[in-house]
Image 1 (cartoon, rainbow, N blue to C red):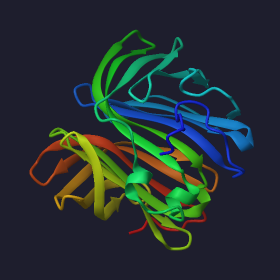
Image 2: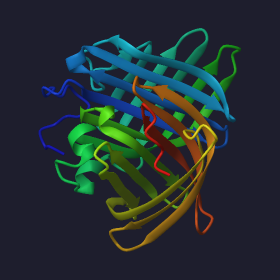
Image 3: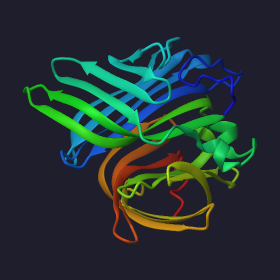
Image 4: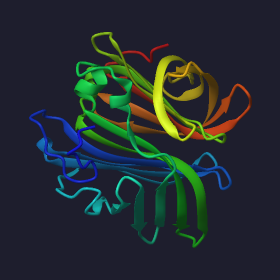
Length: 305
């Protein structure tokens, strides 16, 4: 990551028409079976913005707000960014952030607090500037693991007290979904302290591209290889289960499976994402939770299986 870049502040756009700066948050609390997918995206050269704000409990929706063509804003996370009534604010740089929303129907006050520091997975992957992710999806893609605590208040007055874990990410650079034929992602946070960022993309050229790193023993290190197999439902887009195997830079093997707890679909015109919260399990039985994500190009270009 460029040393002069403040990814939570304003990052000047290049001339790429789909230049993007975005802030993403998710979490899952197994005690309450509650989780969320939250995103704020800003497309400076298109003069528009978008947000996702999707919450679920025990496999069913709690609240969903999706705004894909909001007016542009010059605010960023460091300022306190409000889109569609959702406010995201950096409290301590790259360590602590707060998400709030307050209406009669649904209220949220949640804080993401870093467990592992945010690391640029594109930089650690070392795919080079011509790699499909680095060239067309983001120049910088920071990910970090967090505790997530706070409250959710439903319109009947019920208060859900959240004490879970999740990822957050910050992306700066182009976001040209049309450059990808398909991609798949697993981001498990295991109970033994291991967390994995594993993303496999297939460009329209047919080339493979990756964003990959693993947190273990208190630091992020590279991943050397990924073997990924997804099992889909009949729609060929919703994950039923995953079977992945990675080898890290130390030569250690991490094989894990995952089953879907919840899914939601996010439309992007000629591309679509299916966002899943997954329960993951390592070969030794260690449990974890986290994101499972897939992207698909239209007209239908396949799911990589």
